[in-house]
Image (tube, rainbow, N blue to C red; front, side, top):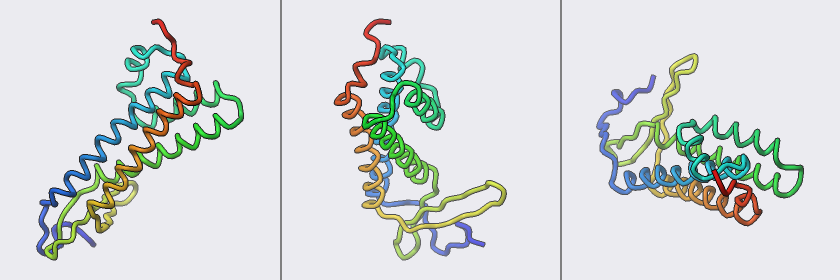
Length: 168
């Protein structure tokens, strides 16, 4: 069995570069969360204020379910619907990447290699370790950020953002 205690020379202190990369993922995710809020607000025809009040405390999986339901209810089959669903799928991928980065444990081996440990406890406890670099984590942050920006741009360019109500 693998455990952090079994790793000789285990050090919990990761590099500053990796720490900053993990922070970049967190910031990118907040942008993605806002983009989902904007999509829900637009498709539901809510004002910005009401949309924020409704979506602020909703967990990501619930937001995704609401957004997919709104797409089903409000958009006919076609290019806009197809592209929006592709962006929603990218958002789900970004969320999975973020969860792995934020919720895994991070460490450095005595040879200096940084790695992350994913612990799962569904049915049976399992732990897997993967070497990680700041560059790889930054690539995930970039993916998440570009997804959020692409979603915001799509809402604007497709006219869906104009569906938001103009008055409370």
